[in-house]
Image 1 (tube, rainbow, N blue to C red):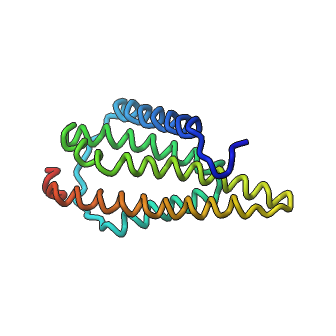
Image 2 (cartoon, rainbow, N blue to C red; image 1 turned 90 degrees about the vertical axis):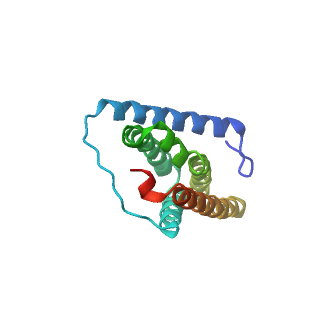
Image 3 (cartoon, rainbow, N blue to C red; image 1 turned 180 degrees about the vertical axis):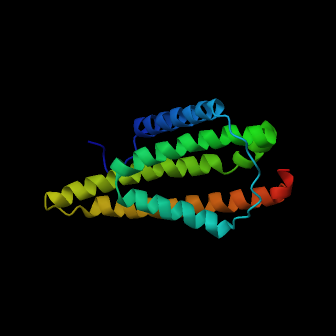
Length: 172
């Protein structure tokens, strides 16, 4: 069993490896598709980005790793597909610049979300055994607090970098 308050490096490596594989599979899958792509000029606010990531993250933590792990891997797969399509539309340079500053932070958030959702599973399992483990619950709440900071910082970076680069006009 995983110690509640300690994140083992093996746990991070395992999750990271699965995420990397899902992203690479998404890029590969995207390369197999023959789709006519168009540019969507819709603007999204920083608050929209933040709330979307945060709400999904909190829901996934509460639904435990049984739900969050496959969904985050699926999200990684679609990140890979989107990276491939973005390179097709905008080129490698623009794709790299729009992703490099915030995507690693969001992926770290995904990893933390999976770890926290695993702890939530441990908490629920204890409840079924009529044991209330306050330490596990506090760990989950602290993790959600860190997720809030990570997703807020990632949203600020994503929005501002995109705007500094020229917004949707830059992608033309």
